[in-house]
Amino acid sequence: MIFNRKIVWQKLPKPLFVLAPMEAVTDTVFRRVVIKAGRPDLFFTEFTNVEGWNSEGKKVVGRRLSFTRSEKPLIAQVWGSNPDNLEKMSKALKKMGFDGIDLNMGCPVKTATKHASGSAMILHPELAAEMIQAAKAGGLPVSVKTRLGYSKVDEWEGWITHLLRQNIDALTIHARTKKEMSKVPAHHELFSDIVKLRDKVAPRTLIIGNGDIMTRKHGEELVKKHNLDGVMIGRGIFQNITCFREDPLDLSLPESKKELLELLNCHLDLFEEEVRLNPQKKFDPLKRFFKVYIRDFDGASDLRVKLMNCKTVEEVKSELSNHRHYD
Ligand SMILES: Cc1cc2nc3c(=O)[nH]c(=O)nc-3n(C[C@H](O)[C@H](O)[C@H](O)COP(=O)(O)O)c2cc1C
Image (tube, rainbow, N blue to C red; front, side):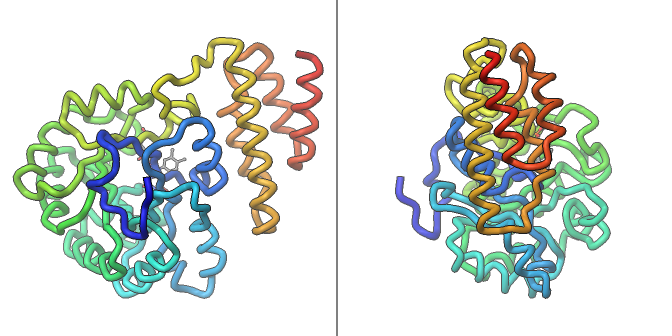
């Protein structure tokens, strides 16, 4: 498949399997490991602050937007509340070669909500509409990722109707309210009604379901049951990094260990490559990935403890090669 600057969401495979944007997780390094493990149809960047990008800190903020061609099609996810800044950024994102721009209107974290951005956009629908218009300035396809409502589930109809009226390419629904955070099961039962609403208000807009979808198989069932255009998987990738494959690894089988360790080594190599380009990249955040690869097999928890005590990539590699000698 060849993608020009401007992908048309409608031309992507159906159903669409998407890796969720996740702060400090879905950077260029992890996206490339996921490609090796079993690629989704579409990637998003971690969310990037529009105001930060338009400030003196632009260079630092902009590092989260680095990518390689292999990760395309790739959508840049942004958050903020200043339409003028977003207009400038959307033009730059197009020049940088992104395939789309996604507006985060679901983040429950205070840093975002206190500035009327993230999930607080639900409380400011007129500003949300202005932001969508501003995002269109660059000529990229525009999508939104949001929640059902701010405090109550029954806000969904008004809020989603409003978004669908803005002529967007795709809408990802994390099927919980902001208030629910991730503490209750996602309300999958609402997906069918949301799709029916879309059919009435904006038939061209794709609906992507999100929340508690851990495997491709579960995603396929939900697509079929609710007529969704696709699903987005977030935390499922932590439980099984091969979750986008038709035939994912069974991590309870001893033979899966070899592949998991190879993927960890690939992650370490790509991380080192990235540090050469961006020497500020810190080692410690890398540790959160160890549980993705070092799990389920005999001796996994002992090995994980050893890796968590490492201070450099070289130390991690050396622990891994010691471990191999005792296999
Ligand atoms: C570590 C982490 C970081 C996240 N960062 C983002 C983000 O940058 N942008 C965003 O829209 N959602 C973010 N989310 C929310 C996920 O994209 C997703 O909507 C949520 O986890 C529910 O999907 P899941 O049950 O498949 O994980 C994050 C979630 C996690 C666990």
